[in-house]
Image (cartoon, rainbow over all chains, first blue to last red):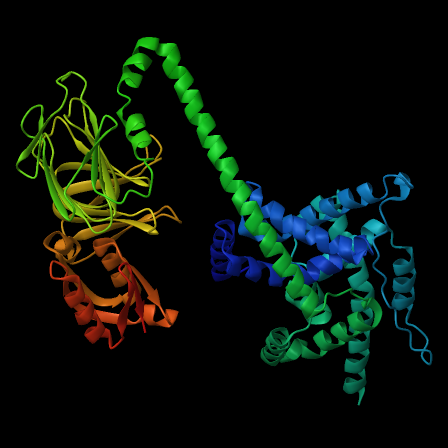
Amino acid sequence: MMSMSEIEYWQVIWKKFKAGDTKAFETIYYEYVDVLFSYGSKISGDRSLVEDSIQDLFIDIYTLNIELRKIQSLEFYFFKMLKRIIIRKLKEKHRFSHPEHFIEQFDLCFNFEKDEKEPLEEQLVLLQKELQQLDSKKRELLFLKFNSGLTYVEIGALLGIKPDTVKKQVRRLILYIGKSIGKKFVELFLLCYKA
Amino acid sequence: MSIYDRLIENSLFFKWIYHPSEEIESYWENYLKTNPNDAERIIEFKSRFVQYLGYNNKKLTDIEKRALANRIIRQLEKAEKKRKYFFNVRKTMQYAAIAIVFFMIGGSIGYMYFKSRHSVELANYSTLPEQIQDPLLFVDKQAIPLNQGKSELDYTNNDKIIIDKERNIISESNTKVPQINTLVIPYGNRSIITLSDSSTVWLNAGSRLIYPSKFVDKTREVYLVGEALFDVKKNDNQPFIVKTSDVKIAVKGTRFNVSAYSEDYSVQTALIEGSVEVYRINAGLFEKGVNITPGQMAYFNKKSKDTKVINVDVNKYILWTKGLYNFSNTELNRITKQLERYYNIKFKYEDPFYGTIQITGKLDVSQNMSEVLEYLSKLTGLEITEINERQYVIK
């Protein structure tokens, strides 16, 4: 969530950017370029294609007459447009090969680090299983949740799923991790209490 | 809400895990200090995230980021040009639509409108050959040579043009259609014109003024390239309008100076008395002009196309009519430019840096030129030497 002063700040920057101010462009660019690049890289492994898409994204938002109802939705807009541009480019690229496979899988792989000495707690076994079964959409969902300030509604809109589904999915994973901590904490607490 | 619920709704928590930076670290350090009860669970929660939900991110290096930013900036500049073009096309289309409506209302209105084609003619006359060396008056394409140096023209005696108080030129007495007069005053010359409505115009060196021998239209329109001081006779029924290639100045009886040299980056309108309104030349139908009051100058930037209003000592802007130039913290470049115009000579700087020296003082250009140059040389501490009749070197 943005604070009032943050909102005002970005409104000014946005206005300046639309008026052609290079400094304002750089402010927006450096705020978003990292996350946009890592998001784009997970849709396509082609670095230069992702870079070109980021370039097109900024040209588009500059030239098109965009009605930004709220400055808070700027981030949503970036993700949505970048994805659209990358997919368009991928379609062009794979026009003559296998159009049915043109969209690569959302390439988010969690490095589930297992300690070989200790057996996994029950919840973590479930987590590992769940992570292995995540489909492309759910991987993207988690990426957006972990890498942006997007709301559940916005993530849902990006992926074409219900906001509720997004929330549930996120909470499931979190619960696996959180639960065992709670337990551990209780154990710790009991240990202290007994002693 | 449990602590975990709160954490996962906080995007700063994920930033802390996946995109740590100094600011984020210090934010959480502070957060943990103020919430000591939750601290342990938060840290544990975070470390588990890193352990089980960590992933690899592809990143751009700083150099790649910079390069991409520069690439985008170049593209944005290109897009900016295109955008302006489209905007203009759209505007033109709007006017075209308005024009069509007008024609539908009635051809007669259109006919009457196009009958007063003065401004079109004025514009055509402004494209005279650039390299005219002697002062000339064109009356309907007939060229009349004028005195070198200073000349005077008087249009107040019906069909006669009196030149330098003695020469009478009878314009062909087809008085119904006034003739278009074009006065060309090259560098090194000046002229004073009294127009048919008794308004007076001082025309500075390197300027040309286009005007009708008589004002018969609804407005009194003249076209200026260069610099002139206007002293306009008041007539509310027939507004006086000065057009330049970039601005249009609407006037009711008043005194003001306009500097609109084609090689300058600005058009400056300084007002001494009365009131004037300055418009862009291609202003939209409903675009408002900039109003200035005595003591103010409207500074129109040709590049950005906007007009700024500045408070100035307006008397400085009309000193040239008395052969005086007043400078305060003015770059030598500007002064030599004015002297070039006044004496029709050229200066060369041995070191271009000299041109940026700022000087303050007064030059009386009605004096002998060599005296003026000697004075300027003293003022700047630079040497001004003659190469030939028209060329001088500053070193």
